[in-house]
Image (tube, rainbow, N blue to C red; front, side):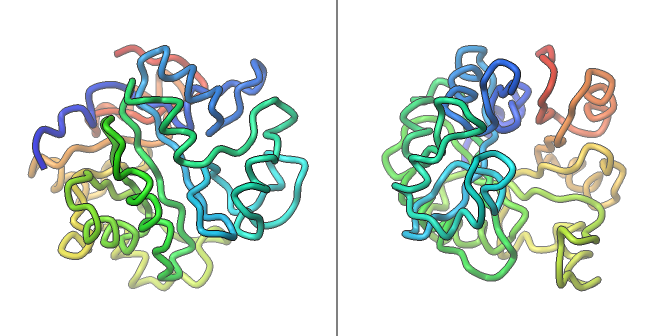
Length: 249
């Protein structure tokens, strides 16, 4: 895999350097440009369109950030590309658009969103789009199956597992205790082959995470929203994923 020191070299801007008050919406090209100019690596999210394209958008539905309603996956890439973000001139970009905007200026951490359904088409499409990209990039996901798909198709691209201590509530429908434990303990390395871990910053005392760090696995902490939380996170992680303030480093 080579040198992975770039993964923890600088704080990572969560969904780009977004600031709604300044017209920069999360995961927009404006937020990407602001982060690249400031020299911050960027974490971004991708969802799949109706025609199988990788679109840069966090939510499974359009309701929160656009005037449209319903599932992202119900619209084509062209339709999503004409959907404005929170009343700004920005629209929902494709992953290819995002790559072209950043152009290798800063590293990218591409989160492959997943409903944990076993559908890995989005991972396959992300690998395809990245085929000719020359910048530093990693693929990350809560879903070990997405990472396994990426590993099979592009073993040279670093992979990171996103995890937390608990998987309960409405956000994780159908989650069994056994699967929740597997995800929290990241007990899937043989299949997913993750190279680094990004863990919730309030859960960094988990024994599995401490053991991984002792083995030299790079650890980033998400999502940090204040200098005090950054100090807390860096006591148990090598770097932070941040938003809402400007960290040092």
